[in-house]
Image 1: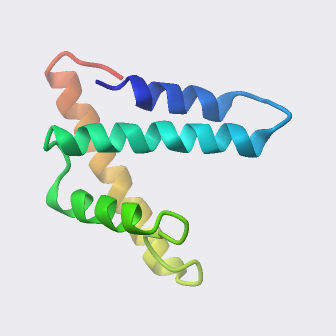
Image 2 (image 1 turned 180 degrees about the vertical axis):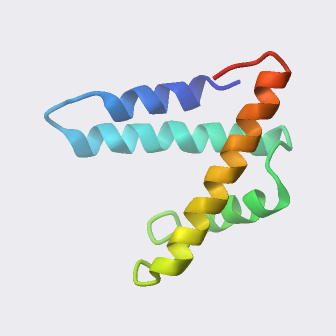
Length: 97
């Protein structure tokens, strides 16, 4: 289920001469992963809306304007908390990342 996610993570870490092409391939894998989560109805309501906004216009999608540092920080903190909670739930279930 998480194959595309792990492939994208690996691709991001690979040092190649064509970094842009490598990152584009990683992005494609992330998109496939998110599509799979959406197909299995595993995205929360808010994440589903964000994913739909991204898919509507991936080149200009952003969570917060680049010039709004406070909003960007708040989003980053919120996402960090969500990730931490999810990791704790996975550990309780005996699943580790």
